[in-house]
Image 1: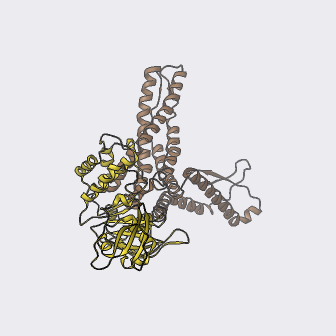
Image 2 (image 1 turned 90 degrees about the vertical axis):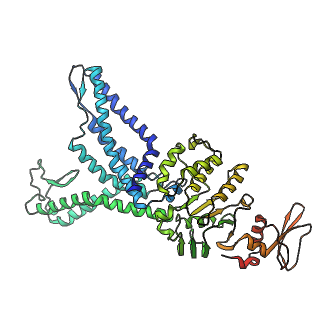
Image 3 (image 1 turned 180 degrees about the horizontal axis):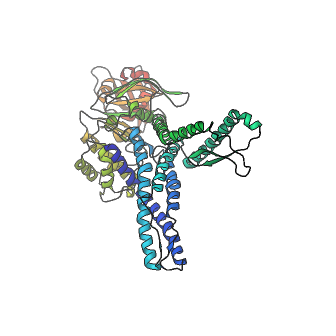
Length: 275
Length: 277
């Protein structure tokens, strides 16, 4: 544990300049549109539509994924800096845990706090300057915390990409995810076609509502007024089972699986790449 | 301290080391010499767990370097030929790094900085390459690691710093500590490195102390090229030839020039066959 604390301390200090610039950029992006909206709204003491939640989501996911993707580029994958990384007297898994804590846990929590404090400052300025303000960023909103949990899971994929690829980590990871989604979609469609072949032959029409994290919610097509086969009582338990299995895989296994592969990849780099 | 048995290592198909054996006991300042591409840096990386041998057995400080145990790494300081130092004040660098080196002595570190005439108020990025090297060396020496590996340590050092380097390394040497210094600048290391290891074509062709070398050979400046069964090597030098001969009983000891010794070993490895590690 001590080593992880020291590694976190080291990482934070080495990243501090970039983090300060990043924080300034976020604050600017939050401040300017907010000022513009507050000054454009002519009704005094009125509430303006806050954009914090959407921006928080963008910075959390996009910013976090990009930062995570770059997390090994300046250490493990850098020919000049690799020596320092390799000779640091800590275990490979301590290095990995540090990355998970730093980019997966500390980053979203600090970002949330930063949004909260920034929104207080910005809305204070708006109230004093224009007499109008928006709601501050709600740090206790369960939606935000759920986003953080989703971020922690999905971030593990980008952490794996950061360790696996030696360059252009973010783009390569996104491409692999896209390729994976395409392959999985084709596989799912093919499976459905095989399992429900007879119904396809009878030209039964159904539509699939594919909302995120509700992958297998199947509905009937209201325009054709046809009842979907897939929500028939006979099929419902199977679909519920598939949906539950997917949720379990997503919440319980995806991140640990990615972390395990990342750990193996770090060990592999330690064993082979110091040339 | 270091035991390598039947080490096999390859970059691609052609093996660099094939059945390499080496034993290095603690308490010496070893000089690792070899031509370009002989595998000096690779050997140092194998010892420090930065590369993994593909065959054979290695033991460094009682550990398998492949396991990269933090305890082993905390007892090794490796100054590479090319390195990176972050842009931060010295005090911050020390604060962030000393937790990983439990034997680090801060007072001694400051003393070394003073010896090397480094301004402690400067940021690391403001240092020149040579100053950065001295800074890292000061950090490494103050870490009191059992094994200190220095790869071309005098490259980039100015003339006064080279002698300062020799004095400082010699002053920190103890019986519990081993230095391995890989270098091409043998003149910078004269009177410091002893024993000498020469790596050639993936093999240790020489591993002997200067004292033993002095018993084995003589080196003399002669006006004419020498021939005969006792002549090992002739090296043209200004004013004649530096002649290396087998030393016979009763013959006076001569000064050993490391550069000539290296050239003689490379030219006639068979003449030094008894001197392998």
